[in-house]
Length: 334
Image (cartoon, rainbow, N blue to C red; front, side, top):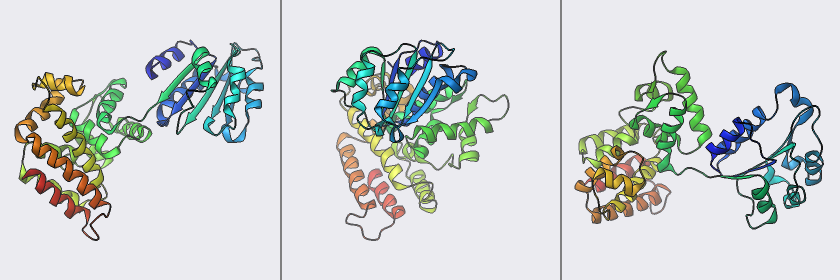
C-alpha cells in the first residue's frame, strides 16, 4: 500500500493489528506513526491504553506481553516501538504476529534500513498487517514532491519556485516541510501562491541568482547570465555550494542524454519518455536538444564527474570552488 492509502485508511479508522514502517526516509515513517498515535485512541483513553517504547530500551518479550494484553474500557490499545531497528532479536516477534490480537495496534517504527524480507517475521506482518517501505526521494523528483505537498495545503507554487527550494534544501523531507511551514506562516493574507519573492525574503535564496536560473542560462547558452550567476555563487559560497550545482547539472544532462534517443522529440513525447507529469516541464529539454548535440552532452557529463573529483581535492591541491565552477561553466558553454 502507498503512503496515501495507508494514511487514508487510518483516518477512516480501518486499522490493522500490526504496522511495519521501515526505510531510509524517516519523514513518511514518522507521519504514519503520528497519524496512528493521533487517531487510534481518543485523548482520554491514552493514559491506560497507549504505550510508547524504544527499541534500545526494551526487549521482544516485553513487547509481546504488552501486545497480548487487552485494552481497558476501550476498543483498542496502541503499542508503538520507536527505533525498532535497535530491538534485539526482533525476528522473535513472529510468534506474536502469527496470531495478533485484533484489539491491539502494534506499530514498529523501523528507521535507517529495512527488515530482512526473506525472514518469516516480514512475511507474517505482510500477511496480517501492513508493511510499508519509506524510500528516499531522488533529487530530481523533489521539485514535484514540493509542488504536490503545497497543493495538499490548498496552495500553489510555480516551477521556478519549487525548483529553487529543491536545489537549496535537498531531499531531506523533514527539513523541506519545515521550511515550507515557515513560508505558509509568512504568506500574506488571502494569498494562495508561494512565489520566488516570498522564498527570497524568508529563506534567503536569491530569485535571480540560483541553480534554476543558472541551468536555464546554460540551456539557452546565455553566456552573460551564466557568468553573472557564477560571480554571485563565488561571492556567496555558503548559500551556493558547488556540489549542489553539480548535482542539478548532472541530473539535467543525464536526462537530456535519454532525450536524444526518444522517438518523439516534442514536449509531449519527451515528457512521456522522462516520466514528467506536465509536458511544459519538457520545454527546457527541447531547447537543449537544439543547443547541445549528443557528443557535447557526453562531454559535459564527463566534465561534471571530473570537476566533482576536483572539488573533493583530486588533482586539485588549492583551486577554490568558485574558480573551478567558472572554469567548468566555460567548458560547458563553449
